[in-house]
Length: 291
Image (cartoon, rainbow, N blue to C red; front, side, top):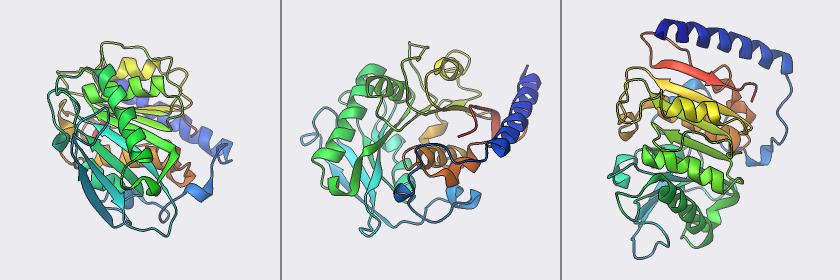
C-alpha cells in the first residue's frame, strides 16, 4: 500500500511539474510590493533563521481579549514596510511553549507571529479557531507591534486540536490568506466551506490523529480551497511539530510566503514539492499545482 502511494505521488509530481512548465505565467494576484527578503533557496527556507533580525515580547492573559497569554515575534526592521501576520495555537492540554520554536523561525523570514496559550488547555478545535482569530485581531488592532502588521495579509497555524482550529478559523474567516494544520485533529472531517489556501501536514505514524482519519480526509475535502497541499512526515508521530523540524518549517515558510506575501519565488518549493521516499523525510506529498 505504501509503495503504491509513493509511486502515485511520484507520478503526480511529474505531471504537475510538466503542467507548471507549460503554464509559465505568474498566478493572478501576485503583488511584488508584498515580497520581503532576498530570493529564496532550499537552504534559506531550511535554515534555523532567515534574513531578518527579530525581537519578541510577551503579553499576559490579563491583557489579551479572547485567548490566553501570548508571545509575539517580529522582524526588527522598519524599512521594508509592513509584514504579514500569523497566529499559532498549541494542541490539546499543551501550552504555547510546545510550538514556540516556530515563532522566531517564521519571524526571521518576514512575518509578525503571535503564539498563544488557549483560555483552557482543554479547549476544543472550534474554540481554538475563535481564539486564533481573536489573536489576529489583537495583533493588528491593539498590540504593541500593530503598526508592523498588514491586516489584509493574515494566516493561521496550529498543532493537533490547534490544527483543527485552523480549519475552523479559515471556515469562519475566508479572508485569511493561508492555513496550516500540523497533525491536525477534528471530529469534522469535511471542509468544503474553506476557501483559504491550506497546507495540511500529517505524520505517518500518528496514533492520536491518524492520517487516514484526519489529515488525508481534511485534504481531500478542501475542494473549494483555491490551492491545497498535503505533506506526510515519514515515520513521524503526532508530536513531531513540538520540536524544531526542518521539513515542517521549510514547507510552512514556503506556503506562507507564497500565499500571504503572494511571492511567486516560493512556488518552486510547492510545485512539484519535496521528494517522496521510503527512506527520506516525506512519505507522501500531494498538491493542486500549479501555484
